[in-house]
Image 1: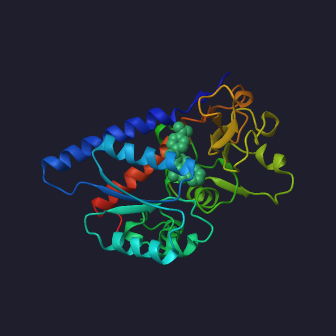
Image 2: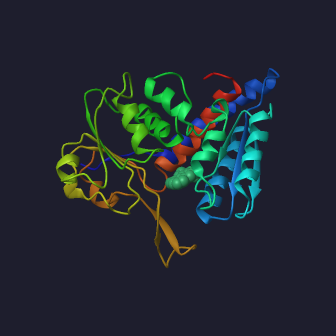
Image 3: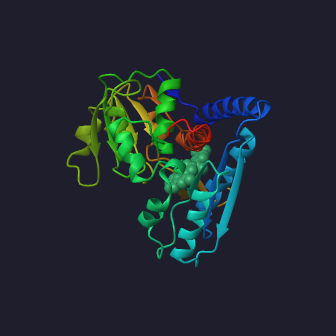
Length: 294
Ligand code: BQF
């Protein structure tokens, strides 16, 4: 049996259509049009592409967006001052500072400067803490996108053993907390693994659900998974491909072709978790405009 492919691109399109309908209603009623701010520092090609996706998605949903571009040599105080302006701009419902930032800028200081009420990326410690405690919070976009995928494909999570591979603050750590929490999707028994885990294969072989967020192409191979496992591939690796227009193509953290025959559900790359990350950011921005979280 071949796995069901979780079509994140299509799901994200559906969610964006739902958002557009809601914004159309808001507009008819003279309500607040959701407005996302975005700050892009420097010219990292991956960041440029992510920001393009986000701005285009705002347009598709009828959201307002404001992109502030700054050169890589901007000083940290200058960037902090832009953040203060966005914090105080009553028309901007939420904003993001695209990561990664240049080396001379401290990401932690920048994240702490964002008003938690406008932190639609969910990276501020106040939102992380609220999420961990199960209080309404802006959830980080990638974990939230994964929950939305599990929900919309009716994938059972209660009592399942979920193995998360990778302990980043934006994916591995939060998705572990969310899937171990109460409710649906949740109630999983979660194992969080990382580079110092001994016998990783022993852990992944026990998994009903694997969340792969390592950042290495083809890291999870077919011999590492149980028959019928649900595979969520968060990896977005650029690998050289001379036949591709741009000279590279995107590849996930799992050996997709080999796992297809063994998994029950699997997310492709591209077109899996990535588009759901962008859709989640928009859902957070709509919630911010409605002051739904706090
Ligand atoms: C797709 C991101 C690592 C570090 C910082 C669609 C995106 C990616 C892939 C996208 C990501 C990854 C984003 C696809 C935003 C997801 O079709 O597979 C959309 O735009 N993403 C980001 O803003 O910062 C990152 C990954």
